[in-house]
Image 1 (cartoon, one colour):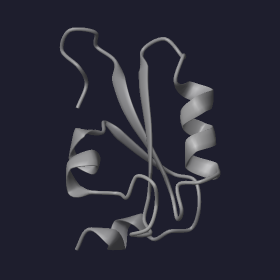
Image 2 (cartoon, rainbow, N blue to C red; image 1 turned 180 degrees about the vertical axis):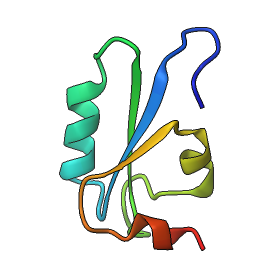
Image 3 (cartoon, rainbow, N blue to C red; image 1 turned 90 degrees about the vertical axis):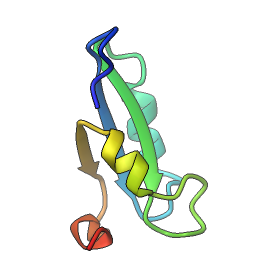
Length: 74
């Protein structure tokens, strides 16, 4: 969730492999004022796999590929 000290909006970018699309989006937004950008992948072998904790800590989840993120968390 938003960090109380900085009031940053936490945005989690999600794609399948977390190798191209979501890390690129994270890089684009990481220095944007007021944004804490993160990325993850829905594939278990992703460098940073999507977890319930990552999703719970995000204010926004932005899907940057057709990954069926809503179906990831039953």
